Length: 302
Image: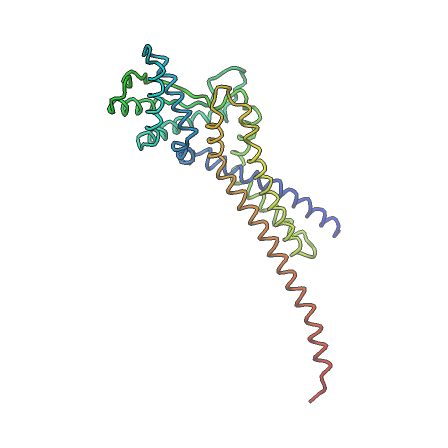
């Protein structure tokens, strides 16, 4: 019976190690990716990221130069416009427009991750960002500053495709499962951890130390997944998408996961070290007690 309980406890510890990263992902998918305000707050710092600023400036400049001809000054106007857009990127007006763009883009993110888009090549559920609000602010600002041809910058839908929906099959299923699991998956993981401890017939402190190591292993798995994720995620991006900007977006979206992975590893190691320290102190106390009693017995009465 004891061997069965020990084996069952070990299996539960393995499940805890595997479910720990999934629990963090479930909370992340529900509270950060699934919530519009959290998503916008996560993406907001990218308005000051050089790679993203350059990608947006390239796209706006490309769109603008395609709509008018500056004759022999075409290249000079292109460079001037590009630099002017970059200088505008750090302003409060641009940051406000960027937040507006991402608030609208979040709808596309949710639709792409939850819609059953089975038609290959159907772009209706692609994740894209409409830079229209940013372009409008750029044109107004540059026109006020007297930048040549700024008033000819076309304001309309200028989209950057972030993710193609027909490549999201497995990712969509995982995301749906994580959203459904929500906070229940962390609760289930905690219950499994408690059950593993309760099944220990003896050496409970040793099992708690192993539980801490299992939690730390789960944090390490999460950190590994976030680390290798860019290689997998960037491979499926459209070929015309700026890779440094895409990497900046990925890093922003997964920053919470990276931080959480370190906290989980630290908590697991802390539990293991604490249990080991308590067990060692108790062993030392037990070993010291007989020696003290023996010295007491050796004393002569009176």
